[in-house]
Image (cartoon, rainbow, N blue to C red; front, side, top):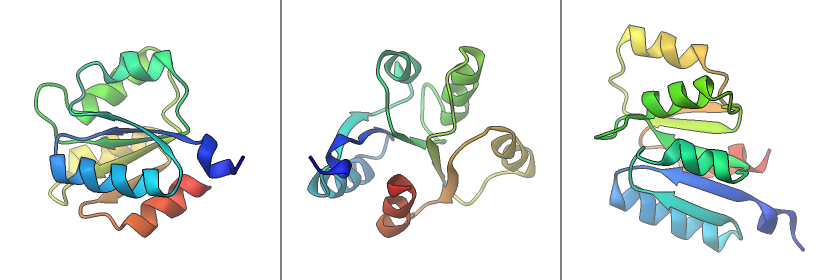
Length: 122
């Protein structure tokens, strides 16, 4: 079995177009993709299953990506496999907070699929 087929990706984003684009592309490349439309329940999902990569949007209603990361840290769940996506308008304080998490990568939207694929592959 191809190594790519064994990789599980959790995509958490409130933007339907991004979810559809990323899901289609990743599945075409052989990845298993679980999609959540918001941060609600995201930490429970991370705790219940092993994901090779978590693609997390920061700016979501109800439960933000920051809140998801904070809860992951509080519950001692690894954030080292998280790729954070965000709009370019982060405050300096938010940028510093992102640096404090031990995440895989931080990308501004719109993120190139090729960049995300390169990060997932390593």
